[in-house]
Image (cartoon, rainbow, N blue to C red; front, top):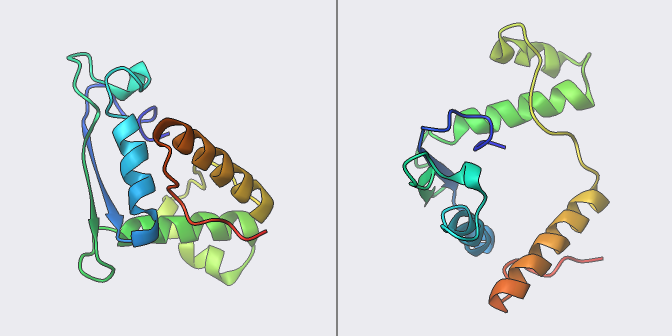
Length: 136
């Protein structure tokens, strides 16, 4: 979504909060979107450079760079889960009067299905499990 929602000439750097159990999965997916023959055309600039220039992981609490994303995710969740709550009211300034965002709220089952499919795709390409097994 980020690659499709930003100008095609811009290259992006992603900074993730460190979560060791998902690092390999992130590396695999980001590698896919920088691979010249596997990734979709929108993943590259008109000059042929991967739009994802770099990605890295930072330990929790060592930088403020991940805080805005956390605040936005919380605010969007409150908007959709409890639109008339006090927390939703407190979050309104983040949106500057426009309650908007990409995506939707997924159920636990939907999330498990998506992760399982992604794991299957990754395993088919590498033969290695990327995520811990999900409990039924």
